[in-house]
Image (tube, rainbow, N blue to C red; front, side, top):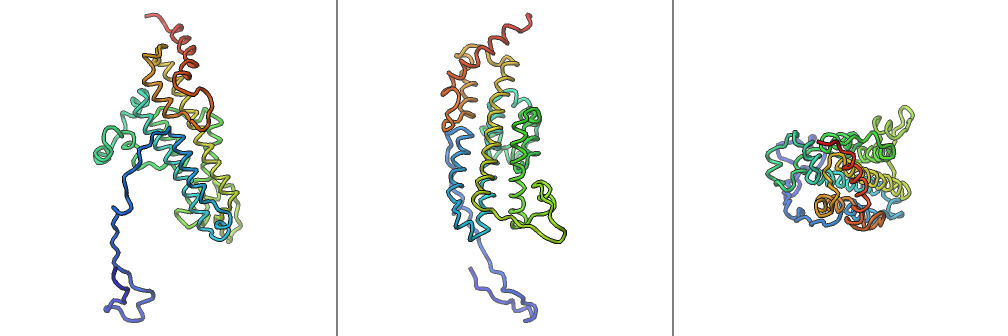
Length: 287
């Protein structure tokens, strides 16, 4: 890296700051091979949240406003990663979602980069899940599901949208609250008095809870709606040997081991669903 010097072509009065330096970034030093994740989408989210939460030291937050802002950025980032991974996986896994997404255009470069096995990620390149509108749009266009019918999920998305607005202030103006942020956050600042985002430990925990809440609500919604759609479309045939591949993949994608709720494995979950499958098959119209 060269020393900073005033360019000889500039007069002394033109040098109001130190001269720029030549900087070479070697990205290969900080871009390492990714880890293969064998957890469900929601459990991977839990793991990432736990890592971010470790940084929430009350004394450090009190001494450095930037830290709190960066933690908001971190918690939204891992939430966005959940949405990206679960929607991409659903496009591959669910035949109905695959049909819905089949009309979407994909950049050839994205397909070449991710490969056929990660087709869903190709579809999501360029999409940011840092607002509820983008989550709704992608869920509708790629999975064929409307979110507006689920009141609990909509309430969780509204809280998540507030955290996203905080993140927007951090990314674009170092925590300064603009008019749009204030509107989403329900603030009415006085004219001529600016507001800045200051995140202490309780506020950080509240933001993390809002992100965890929306992931749980969305994850449960995907499970219930996908199972119901598969039953209605007769993609589940009521025999474990015929249904176990698709059903098992869906269960492994969405089931949370740490939460320890509901059936503990795919087969037990299938036994709970099978009466609904049988009822649908019994009510189908004769040919």
